[in-house]
Image (tube, rainbow, N blue to C red; front, top):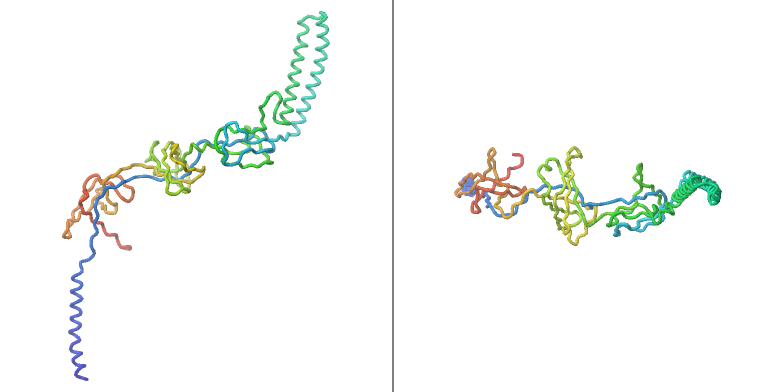
Length: 367
């Protein structure tokens, strides 16, 4: 028993030495991480900026009443198509009692004056027919009769307008019928039958009965930050992405850039508008108020030579990549670059598709 223990203890240093030797041999055979490489390739690069906004009709008009009163009848619903001149609503006049009393008093006064002038006219006409007075003496009575008749008619018309909103002498013209001033679709009807409306005048914009818009002529309106507005120009192509419509883009063209910015949340924003082409929506119905993002295309290169931006390295103002030459050898190659979309960048000079470009290792967090 003691002999076996002695043999084990004598063999233990040899086993430890062999184990350490195998471990060193294994470590010396490790070649380390393999360097990744890539190649230049042909691709589409689009440089763009993004503005947020909404889809709106170019022409939207609020229909208002010219008289105050109660809505007796509404003839339209939201979503209905109307033509210019179609009746939208009928207003029932609720006359002001003071104005009504003044108008009735004016009618009575005009009637009394007319009756008195008519008596004088008939008396002097009889004298004129008998040859007692001359034509020159009779004419003032004739003129006074016509004037008093006009005054009485005007007073009666005013009374009728206050009561009913229309005068006999105006024929079919009336303020109680509100008519569409443009052709289009009714977007909203914020009132109901029986509701009260206020007339539109120089002191009050009046109650909106409905809003009508031409849905065949839509535009995008949004805002762009001051850091981007200097890069765009009127006429630039735009691709609109509507949040409510998936997997479809709508082409448009930039037509307006506001000359004055407004401050929002501490940043200066400029209003821009883009015109949607007549066929851009196809069979898709664009509703007023859809939120949308406008991709304003600043530059576009089709099938151009490019590399991923992550392979670029910088030396002052110069840009270069490392070309793998094999046997752990590399060559620094300076490039002339073009536009970038944030992922890939155009290469104008310095590379071919056969060059093997080293991909720099990502730095370890905290180092």
